[in-house]
Amino acid sequence: MDALIPASEFGLIMPEILLTGFALVLLLIGGFTRGPVASKISGVLCVVGSLLALYFTVNMWGTNLDVFNRLYTIDNYGTFFKGLFLVILILVAIVSLRYADREEIGSGEYYSLLMFGVLGMMVMTSSHHFITIFIGLEVMSLSIYILCGFLRNNITSVEAALKYFLLGAFATGFLLYGMSMIYGSTGIIDVVELKRYFLMKQPFSVAMFIIGLGLLLVGFGFKIASVPFHMWTPDVYQGAPTSITAYMATGVKAAAFGALIRIFYTAFIPFQFGWSGIIWILAVLTMTIGNITALVQRDIKRMLAYSSIAHAGYILVAFITGDRAQASSMLYYLMAYSFMNIGAFTAIIVLQKKGDNSSELDSFTGLGARHPFIALCMCIFLLSLAGVPPLAGFMGKFYVFSTAVKAQYYWLAIIGFLNSVVAAYYYLRVIVYMYFKDPVGDEGAVDRAPQYGLVMVICILALLYMGIFPKVFVLMAQKAVGIFG
Image 1 (cartoon, rainbow, N blue to C red):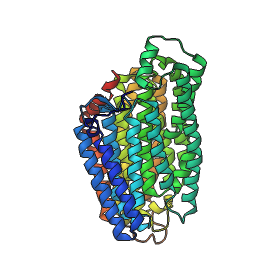
Image 2 (spheres, rainbow, N blue to C red; image 1 turned 135 degrees about the vertical axis):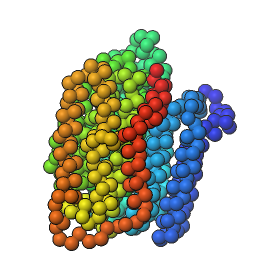
Image 3 (tube, rainbow, N blue to C red; image 1 turned 120 degrees about the horizontal axis):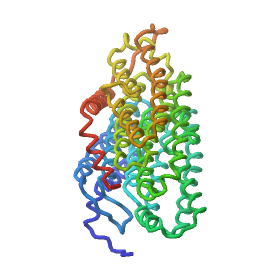
């Protein structure tokens, strides 16, 4: 292996370099300064650094190169996810400009960990080498473990961080053992080389390979919160700071699916007939259990946690087909899902009071009369999650279910549709509380910081544009998955 790395290759990872540089600067700021002013400076630097990284990421579109001795890949697939992660980071950072300051958790460390988390996500989805994917996973996970417990005086936040850390460590162990067994059975840890190896029908240890493949599914199943590896999700989503819940619900899930799709649609596509049956069962269980459990939730954050589990099941509906040409439906869905959830969690933040991390359904009672703008925004996000046209949520479900129908998974598409009908109940229930119930007592004022309004408006415009003019984003997603052709 050549130890000399051309200087030009560093220019190809400028987004990652920028994130790392700004994150280190924010760590220094957090180490030497404290207070509201330092928090604002840290937040602004986080947004500026993310915007710069996004600019360089967009300029990478169309580049297809393996760098650093094939340990890292620059292609449209990775660039698509990098752009999505950076947009998520920018929106969460803008929300945090007010929220983190209000909860007195805003510091250089907070914003630095946000940036390091996205750095890990980018590395995860921009590599076809098991070692690099694992390094990205660990950078992302360690950042999230800490961020979940940033409400140090809130016992549920600390509990959420501990639960996520312990269960995440087990899941990471499963993932690493899976990679090790696949390496032990084939002697290869590069995803592209694995595909060539299998297509050449080289002999390998079948039993060890099957066990390794199963362990990989367990590890990724935890990260995407699929049943039966979903038990951590409601407690962690409820206990974590709400801005971090939005960050986890979108960025972590997208990163896990990004790595999962790259690995399985490249290396293991010759065995699609083998793992598709397992994924079929997981998809049905994930959709059904997620939606049924969400029906009885009284806390909106827990409801959205179970909703996120169900949405993972919808994406698995398209994943199971193994149709690489139609894999763009999953990327489109993840993009729409990100805007829906960030917007919904931002609306929850607006209604929360300092020191109160709860989000009871009763707090939305009469919201349409008390705060019409917030109620309207939340209504749009919930309708999109339910899959109501012309919002992006409808087009996302249409594409993933169409992919299943084209691959002749008719029953799976029918089950997915029925689950969407069930899900509409608990989304519409919140709307009923907002517009058709009288307020209970004095609900008090809400936090009207302009940062929240800006983020909600951006999310609404994105959902409307993606829903009415989906072709632009579908073509982008198709170019991204073109690497699997």
